[in-house]
Image (cartoon, rainbow, N blue to C red; front, side, top):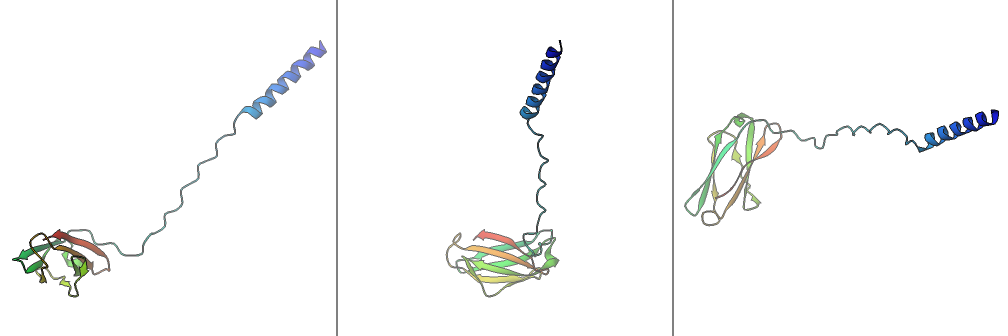
Length: 131
């Protein structure tokens, strides 16, 4: 009988050891995501709207007019690009201000991009239009 007890204990020990090796280890805790780092130190444009019109006057002139908007008081001036070239003159940041731009062709042939330059140093496209 003692031989059977020793054999039984040996079988139990073997089963326990096998179970310990066959059970997968518990999953490691997830790695927390890295802390966000700022991608830019440039200021953000103020919240609100800016309204600018671009109207072609015949075949020779495009008139840009700053109508206003909820963020109008935050605008310093506007940079104007015509067909990919930045114009040397800036559109005033005063509501009602206008600026004539020499057209290069017929209606629909000129690409105007107007960028608002805000008083806090931020910039944002205010108008992107074919005229």
